[in-house]
Image 1 (cartoon, rainbow, N blue to C red):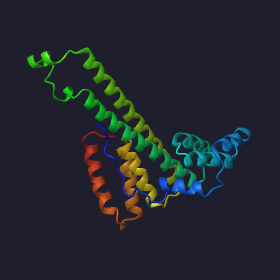
Image 2 (cartoon, helix red, strand yellow):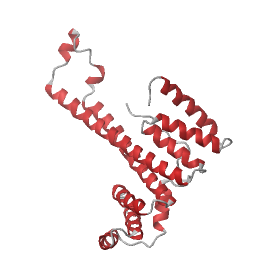
Image 3 (cartoon, rainbow, N blue to C red):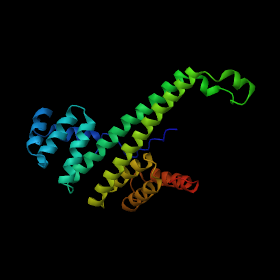
Image 4 (cartoon, one colour):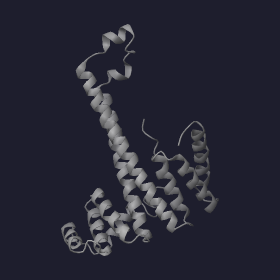
Length: 231
């Protein structure tokens, strides 16, 4: 089952969203990816060169490559708040794309093997008659594998986003919005305890924020889930 996508305050008007990554990259000197790669090859630890490469890749919609370049950049410049924010936003963009792929894989699996949804138990007489087709079983296994791989990749991307927001939160401990973004990523990564802590930190920083009632409800929901054995 796919996790429910949680996103309080996520959108084009939110600081640090993917729209800001695109806007920020367009404001730089727009060199090509090839030019940026050549400069990085000459100066592999040059922070400015790595930043230019990431921005060039973002402009071309090459999110995975932009992430790799920006990961290298933040290792060189770990105190750059804007870069940490952009990296987290790129991870969220990647996770959202992978989530859409998982949803598509799930739908394709149901179209390819719809009988699996309604088949009687294999130990029932009708189930014994309906089951047993090697072709059908192969299709079902392949569809399930594709779904599982997409889901796991999505969760890992959300974990990467969570780690990036945790680094950003250490740099900006009074930024309530960062706590919401951290919690959103943690929920979608399945890290519920981390999400609850971040949501509570948000409420401590901004108890009167318009998002606060929704966040309080989400905290109660997550706490109930944790009581049932969630992480």
